[in-house]
Image (cartoon, rainbow over all chains, first blue to last red; front, top):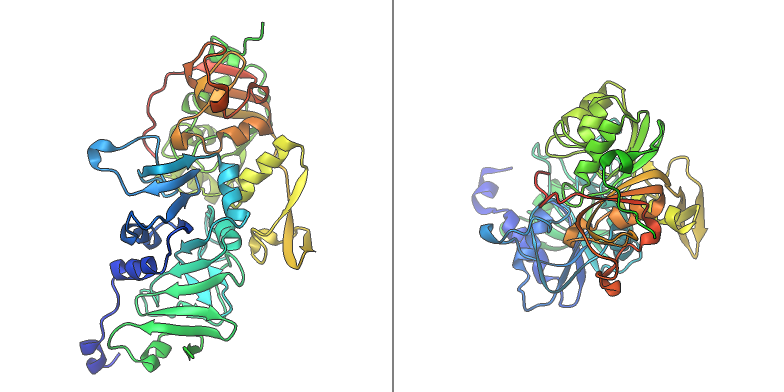
Amino acid sequence: MSAAETATFKPFSRTQMAQRAAVDIPEGWYVNLGIGIPTLIADYVPIDREVIFHSENGVLGMGPAPEKDKIEPWLINAGKQYVTLRAGGSFCHHADSFSMIRGGHLDLCVLGAFQVADNGDIANWATSDNDTAPAVGGAMDLAAGAKRLWVLMEHTTKDGAPKLVTKCTYPLTAPAAVKRVYTNLATIDVTERGFVVRDIAPGLSFEDLQARTDAKLHQAA
Amino acid sequence: MINKIVQSMADLMAGIKDGSTVLIGGFGAVGQPNVLIDGLIEQGATDLTVACNNAGVGHVGLARLMELGRVRKIICSFPRSSDPVVFETLYRAGKIELEIVPQGTLAERMRAAGAGVPAFFTATGVGTKMAVGKEHREIDGRTYILENALRGDVALVEAWEADRWGNLTFKQAGRNFNPVMAMAAQLTLVQTQHIRELGELNPDHVVTPGIFVDRVLHVPYGDPSGF
């Protein structure tokens, strides 16, 4: 990274990443948000835009986190955080909850990821084939079952290695599943051409974005 | 007169054999039949296969059962927790077998068992490590893998309300795996927060009809805590 570039270029914060994804979710969609940064998206969807949030443990119509003195100990999300239920919300058992996922009823799922390939492959559950005690949770069901899968993640690892790649080196969660990626540097669609850049963080050039990306990037037509 | 309500833990746990497959409800601490897990520890059955979403926290409940060397194999989707020390120690030492299953496949395998469906095709896991060695089939242009039903010899379930016929209701997110496991096991054992008179439960509100339930113990446990 050159000195001139660091002076002018400002990556999106996690909050901004969540906000950018939130504006793209229209009223009426049923949405599952993965554990971690994707969960933040719900904070930026206004309550009067009726987006219905689903949680794997049988909660449909989740509202925001409760105030401390209003915690309901029987009401948690898949990340085991206390949540609320908005008017119109409902509970179901696990097989019904995953029927919503696996039966293609969710309009959108947003997950975090270790790597996304330009054919839409996603790796987000294990970092090596010999991971001690791998834990998959509902990630494979969500990636294979939702109508659309978006990913919200940092553009590179902490060491600067690209996470947008030509081929995932980590174990796959699902092949050819991701439709869009929101990173701290750009928003990128996964298309038949590969990665197509929708927007870039202010001050960062297309060439500089490409330098931080393993797979080839395309300009939006 | 049918009365599935038993008066003691010993009566509830009677007949659980060594080598059983035990389905344990709950998601985190919510809806988890803690008192029944302690009852199983007391009862003594060993060489168990346990299906549960998680693999225990700290040194209590399921973690304690594993620590005592009573669990041969665990079938779960997410063995990590805030404190998975017992599972991880046993797993690294090669003293417990792990079958990792996507959460929806886990639920569906039990639903299938309860519904008399021996196996089913699913898109979940196609193209991943989960698909290795499984039958693949293309149906209407999409590839699926075959997953077998998962039947339990015993299910441990936590309910909110129960009557003497074994009709059950659940509280909020405490429902989770409980109704699915109740229908998937040969012997379904329930701890319930409240006992209701027959006819007192609104039939429209019963989630698990008593046909899926064998024995019920009144355990006014209170709110869940600790994940």
